[in-house]
Image (tube, rainbow over all chains, first blue to last red; front, top):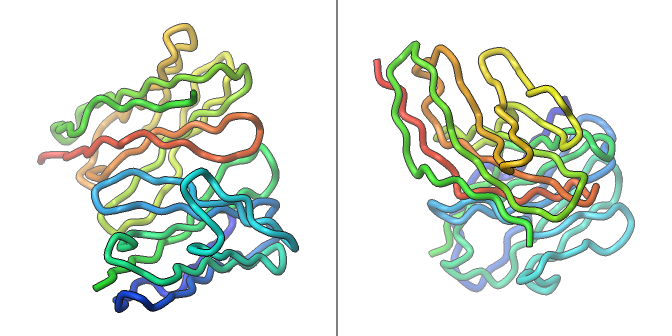
Length: 114
Length: 114
């Protein structure tokens, strides 16, 4: 399986600021996703990161709040904008090497907003 | 609507015993995939096992097996010979529509006692 890294691994941020999370894969992958896991909750898909075009957002998530980039087949970023304490979560990227194959997750970014 | 249900918020098992974690799903799609992931306290999501809707045999991966009962729409995870390191959250997930997007259940926290 692909090796996935995320930066930062954790951060503490002030409300009103923005944080960009990076996801790097050691091989080219077809699909990349971003998920959010709020404290004590399950994972919820934020969006599918599309290479060279705008991300596809799930219901309840908007580009202004969670802008996503995917400039190539191995890298993506998620920005959490104008943060509030409700944004405190683990943010995870995941990848699928080829359509229909298993989805693997990065180690996650733990975000605390004060 | 697609949905994953895990009815056991917490389970405990004695070391070396087997344990079954329940998962039921709801979808009108004919083609779908069922996954189990393990999340230790570190927060990473570790892929355990996959079952495709058209697979006739139950999936097995080492000590993990998936008891797939299509008519009952259940995909229970069986862990044989539990180890202390198996203590973690376990999530059942489903992909539908060939898009690889995952829908997660609420999770089951497993505690393995010596």
